[in-house]
Length: 400
Picture 1 (cartoon, rainbow, N blue to C red):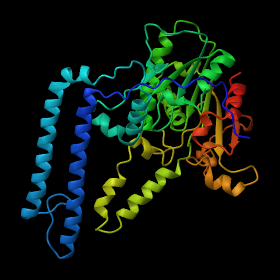
Picture 2: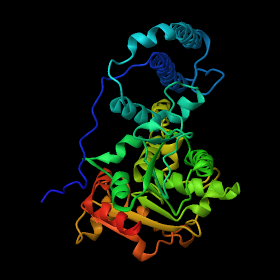
Picture 3: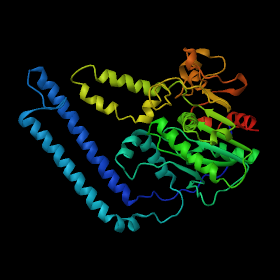
């Protein structure tokens, strides 16, 4: 029997794909940066060939010298000149372009949000460093819109939901089901959703979230009897980093947080980033392939942090579960209950079962989830965790 979603709701109405004037400027910057990157890769291969016959290189590693180097520098300089010209021209044109490019339909453009979220997951740290209009700011949201701090919804039970890598707050709804809406109906929670740039370091997102929660709870209009948070995938690591940052800064909101629920969070790392790191090592093993290692290093700081589930700003020292907060974890595997080997190898397709359960061969790195606070979903994939009925019922049981 196929799994049926809980609390089915109609999918949100899709609007026209919305293009903004600032998107043109940001896309032009990405295009010129890509051109410069390709030129540097070609030059790197060229210099690798020259080095085999004893010709000297340029001032920087992987660069050529002489007339050849002058040609490459001219191309790079011309590309930068074009970039500056485009940026200046498009910036001046934005006030006139914006009305012409605005979509005729109002509302949230889910397609644009998904595209921006994916782009930020892969390149978000670079977009933020470049002050790109495509870089997503961290926002607490409700109904796909930024939360108005002057008109907070209130309620005695607050639920925060934090999405994973390359996703956004709208994508908590999968297959017509939303864990936040389901728990609001079942237990009277007021759900708020976080949207953030998942390409930034996990510790940095944790610090920013800690500050936003401090301001939110200070302005919350009613007394809270319950405050819980659910993090899917990377979102669980961001929540752990936020509690740690708040504790170190002496903030008081962690004392109000009663429950933390991690759904498919790679506490001990994710193999996909490790595979990317292996590609880096492989490409760097020969002088001819070494210039192409630039492509492998396109992974954002957020993705790199997933290699070992790093939540601290410096180093990778173990970080235990926060004291005084009830912590729960949901792990998933594509295997059946009788396939122990497949459970270890497959996980949910992205996160290994042991990583989501906080298990590690080093005792200092193990996370002490009580057996009653662990749940394994069988034959469920990473994204299916957001709509699986068994997971929804378990969340409702834990947050009852």
